[in-house]
Length: 88
Image 1: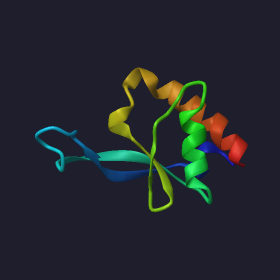
Image 2: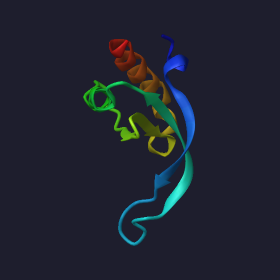
Image 3: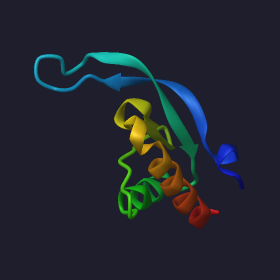
């Protein structure tokens, strides 16, 4: 399947961080990848040659756009293509 068939853009809430604002979030967007084995998919992304650190929410692997720098877009897409090709 093509990448655009496996990955959706969704609205999300991104954590600002810990410290003095541990519960504060910002509106954001994320890439969402439904999977029958989300923990395994997340693990493969973390162990990829260009690691990606997603989170799993309600059985969906999510990569928040706020965690990806502009010059990392191509590397992220390459990793997603490689990892999702293995998942089939």
